[in-house]
Length: 173
Image (tube, rainbow, N blue to C red; front, side, top):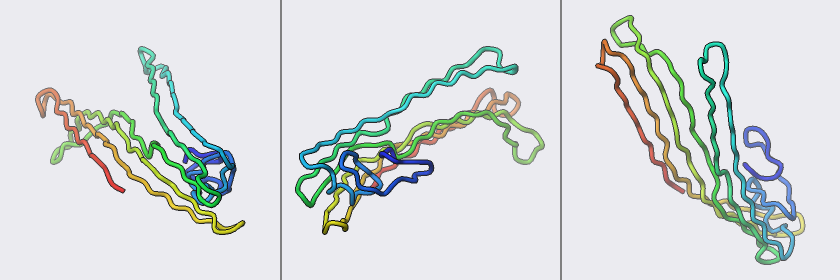
């Protein structure tokens, strides 16, 4: 959750706040301030520089991600809503390893790479049923794709290189 008050592993506060869209608690939406329209945008940028004795040339890795766009308002005294698009998950990894050739004691150099992610379009409603009681409902559509690629290097077994890529497409309410 990218909402105000979110913490590790998706833990968040379940409070009602007049100026924040709290995705984890749609029942808080009718408690938004009157005549208030909220719009939120968030993203992240990460830059890593790899250096060390085993690394001949320093390597820099940069990554930028869109994380969330949300809007919300209070339509009536008893009804508030929010809608938007947010990142649901992401996959970004690369590593080298050794893979055993079945039936032998030999290993082949293997490079693994994963990219992609899932996004969520959401529409949330909250209804105030009394001063201290409200109901909320989150509706969402999740979509995206993820690619997993395996590169095998071994002139003795497969020529020079064998690449396998699997792309998985996801979509659903």
